Amino acid sequence: MKNMKINIKILIIGALMFLTGSCKDFLDEIDPSNITEDSYYQSAEHARIGVNSAYSALKAIRGGAYGGGPWLMVEFATGLAESDLGQAENSNIIRNLINNADNAYGISHWNSNYEGIANANLAISKIPDIQMPEILKNSLLGEAKFLRAHYYFQLVRLFGSVPLILEPIDLASEDLYASGAPVEEIFTQIVKDLTEAENSGLPFNDNSGKVTMGAIKTLLSSVYLTMAGYPLEKGAPYYSLAAEKAKEVIDKGEYSLFESYDDLHDPAMNNIGENIFMVQYLAGTAPSNWQPHIIPYNMNISAYSDQTGAIYANQNFIASYESGDKRIEEKSFYYTTFTSKFDRTETINLGGFFLYKHFDVEANLFTASSALNWSLYRYAELLLIYAEASNETSEGATALAYQGLNEIRTRAGLTPYSGLSKEEFREAVWREKWHELSYEGVTWFDMVRTRKVFNVTSGDFDDFVGHQFVYGPTLSSRELLFPIPTSEVQNNPNLKQNPGY
Image (cartoon, rainbow, N blue to C red):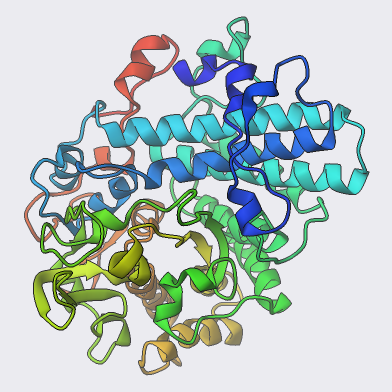
């Protein structure tokens, strides 16, 4: 597999970002011309750069071009996404449930996650032997282990059984053509990395964009929640673990919901408030590049020259929000009108519900260069993880579970819940997750974890297998995983393709 063949020198050169403390330093590029295999990983500075290289892979799937971007893969798999971009074949075949193993989106997910893992592996293997203060050493290892856990969490949920590589790879490595590890073994390693990262001494929260203890515990709560459900079905003990980790974050009191939905897509709010862990960008130097995807196709509303209409919300899904929900008010989560770039006093009807929660206003009005970070884990999701997990324990939905769920509903202008049965509370949380975390790369993973799909017409939850999207196609068991890229299966005789592809 070509990802496993990347040598140490290439991995070193991949260290594009040098963190020192501020977000700008995090995103400054470095000159790799003086870095060699012999001189690398000899100092604390080298260790810092090596860990930074493991962050860089977070950005890869949020890129893209006129034909779409890899981040769209899990959105079109939900049946909730529409597109006006006819040439976006990678999106269209997923949307129509005729996906194949040559889809460039899947290839990008596979490659970027393994590149991140390779860089994390190198850091984890080299840092222990470097002379530096133990506090710094432990914190760097904690960051690297969190990142490796994150990348494997993505891979195992997207593709199932994948190679579990924990050491640096070269052409002589026994694991160069590794077979797929059992799914439970991968999850066990993810938990191991995260529990070790919990002992790293990292700060609970800061605004640097680096891994924090809050991020570690949030990811661990999500991992435990997934292990409680499908495919492992570990049940109540793991729901308890998920609730415990989420509660540790809640009790710390260092995160809170934004008062305004505008804050969700305001670069000034990067890495603070509701944002627990984000992918880092900087306008002009390393700008975020998904804005063209969420701009209507050639409606001339933006400073960006590319306006692709690559994704917008399914209208039936918008109709499934409760009456009075502030999230579907104009320019809360979605937008249906905007001003013309030729005359900002002229309003254009866009003909659909486009994604305002990811919309950088300044970049679209003026600069065409966005500093908006992408939130991987935000506090609203953490509250809903706790609410769902606690409800599945012997204790049932706690007062704190109701409080978190109702904080989200109150912000949306909706009536708080009370007195629900276990089944009613479970579905209330699921429904809130679909509406609150829409188009944030969360929904498809919940579909697979619960084997349930929100029926946007009835408001009920259908079984995953047999659920029909409102525009026709019906989900089968094949869609519980994405196909492993053809090139990986062809190049690695020990790797097996997922069923149905």
